[in-house]
Structures are given as C-alpha cells and as structure tokens.
Image (cartoon, rainbow, N blue to C red):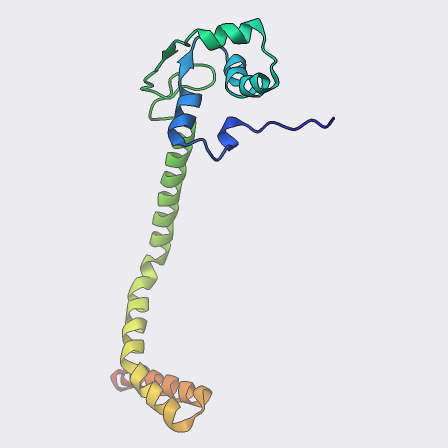
Length: 163
C-alpha cells in the first residue's frame, strides 16, 4: 500500500483568502494538531468508518473560537517591534546610505556641470548641420570629423583674436 503525502490546507485551491485567514490567524482552545486532525483527517476517517472517541467528542462539541485583534507585530520571542522592526530599520539605514552616496557623487560632479551643460547646448545647436552633412555625403565618419572641426574652430578661433 502506497502512502500519499497530504497537502497543507493552504495549498488547496478551494481554500479562499478568508478561510486561510481564519485558519492561520484565529486562536481556539484546541491545538494546531487537533485542528488539522478534525479538518482533514476526520473527513477521510469518517468515510472509512474509523472514529476515535476524542474525534467524536470534538465533532459534537463546538469549538470556542476567539478572534484576536493584533495591534503590534511581535517577534518569535514575544517582544513587540512596532514600526521599527529589524527589516524596516535595515531598509531605512540603506536608504540613508544611498542618499549619502548620491550626495558625494553630486559633489564630485559639481565642477563639471557647467561644462556638461555647455556641451549639451552646443550639441543641440550643431546637430542639424551634422545631419545635413551626413545625408549629403553618405559617410557618417567624415560628417562627424568635419562637424567637430567646425565646432572646434568656432570655439577656439575667437581666443586667437583676443591673445
């Protein structure tokens, strides 16, 4: 005779959210083992005609279910953690560390921001000329070289007139 592995109640597709909530979040006077026994094994044992006196007593006596409203999360040792649990504290520390790293990167890039802004503005102004040269010559490398030479001449040329 082969033995079948019984599935957990949460694995059953018929069990909806409310049943799972009641199954795992309600406290009653019986232990978890007896709850599992009455819910799953009792049905199969009734079909086979096997029933212990304890199962008969549990079937006739209505379980006294108490619903517990949980206001704070508790850890395994029973301490109330509240808002600052270990996971949230670690996440908050990592976000703070990330903010500090971004600030340091900003301070390192600060001297170059004006040059980057000028380069972006110059690229926007010169791109139509580059696109026209590339379309006319059908050689993208040559068009890029000529565009760079023209921009360098336009930027550096006036410096020779001053000096």
